[in-house]
Image (cartoon, rainbow, N blue to C red):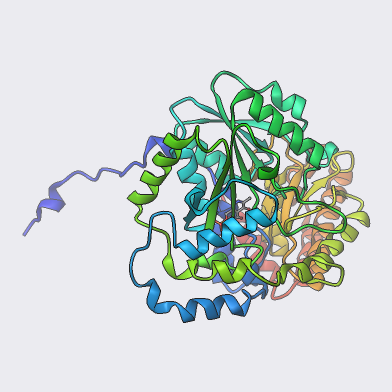
Length: 461
Ligand code: PLP
């Protein structure tokens, strides 16, 4: 018997047009290819995502105990803004940092900062509204502006300025349609920590132009050496400031999905906006209740992240390993990260004029089994950067940078042999002997099979 569904013409299901310009390359094509290789049995070193658990970091055990203790309290929905002890703990943290005028009323807990980025923008934007977003950025900010009908206007944080923005340059991008400025400090992907005078200038600029400040401070306690983290909310008085942070990074609890947005500054003038945000929060009922019970325990008392970012600590030493590897490389350059857990590494285009970040990331994955995020994933116009996370231990990072150096050396040799053009596709110009040499080189890596590497390369489209 022929069923009704058999008679219907096969129509493809199209996604929403609103997604046309939305990208999140960190988990995109390259990451899918890495999964494919893993399924084939290859061991891939994935440095594309800042997920501490994947590199052996643990959430402080007191946070786990707090959740176990409150398991029975977590069975129902809670208030749309979050449970009171968690919001109050966030208030106390802000007060201890010198932020004034904040109560639990101004704190919204979400399923990670990610959810809150979407909600704070959705509550604000009308079609065509502009938001100033850093370039490079954490790409969710650009994506969420676009998804909510706005236009992300990127302000440059140039490598030659240590990835710190120039407030004067930024001021020139403000138009009558600009509603807000996004600041990511300490920064992902660059590791820049903005100096106080720069933040002060940005605060005055936002105040003068009536812009909301969205300060993404998810890496707030991850700073190295003498870098000073200055909470934006201590500087913004005469406009609305939203500080976003959470448990994912500092407390190594990405999977708990807890973040918060705290509003300070001109909150009274923002009453309607905050009501809209509460409405959106109500529509999703509440965020994960169980993990909210870990917030108070996390924020109070000893902050174990300090051990990780101090000399001798795992993140400190890993970062140092990357800085040293770049220093000893003929091809690489780096503005050493002062905070967070990433390095945004540049490739010297005087050495490799035809370098292309996406091609490099693909070659590195296929030939050396290392997954990095090409710079283009972070909304930059230049094509000679890539991001790695500093989460692996120093030994693994030394191995990774040896493989990167070998790949770049291969590019340089191919360019020398075949003219400048050849670096664009070094694989294409290798003769049989060179191919065999490269396979042997690839075999030096763990569980690497040169034949399959070449085969895999040709299958990637
Ligand atoms: N903001 C920045 C700058 C990030 O780097 C990340 C995650 O990498 C997030 C927000 C999202 O964090 P969450 O896990 O709280 O959603």
